[in-house]
Amino acid sequence: MHLIPLPELAVAVVVALVALGVRTVRAVRVRSIARRAGSPAPAREPYLETEQRRTQLIASCVLLMIISFPLILRVVPPNGIYGFRTPTTQSDQAIWYPANAFMGWALLAAAAVSTAVLLALPPTVKRWLLWATFVAPVAGAIIASFVYLDRLIESSPL
Picture (cartoon, rainbow, N blue to C red):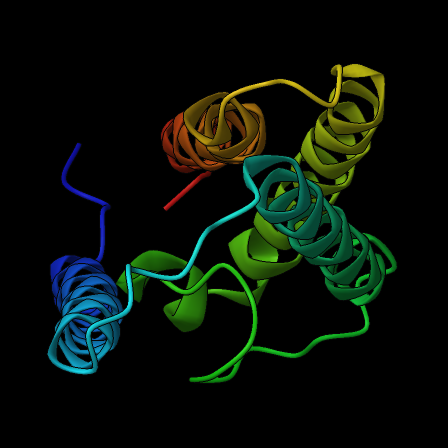
């Protein structure tokens, strides 16, 4: 797929790695401070952590739904910040609006599916399954949007 914006993908990976690193360093510091003080590491309640993560992911789904509505309604003009931004979509308005509308619908459906599954999962579910429930539909929506864009470009009279 020649349409994937590699600079944005690289930035997203770097941001995720930095966030993971900061979280890891913070957790290590808390444990080392607790050990130096002579107390055991703070007890963690997995149920509460899981419920916090579930709540955060559901809030992320709601945010995705809100973000998708302007794309669906085709009110976002070509710009460099918001929308389905590739060199092709930004250079041609005839492709920008249908591609963004499709991506808006795909993200809306992905967020709705993720929310429904996150609400249906039991409280004892592992955190990785919560993340997978959120990431898999969103990744599917993004992949479907690139496939749609590719077909849109092929059918476009350029």
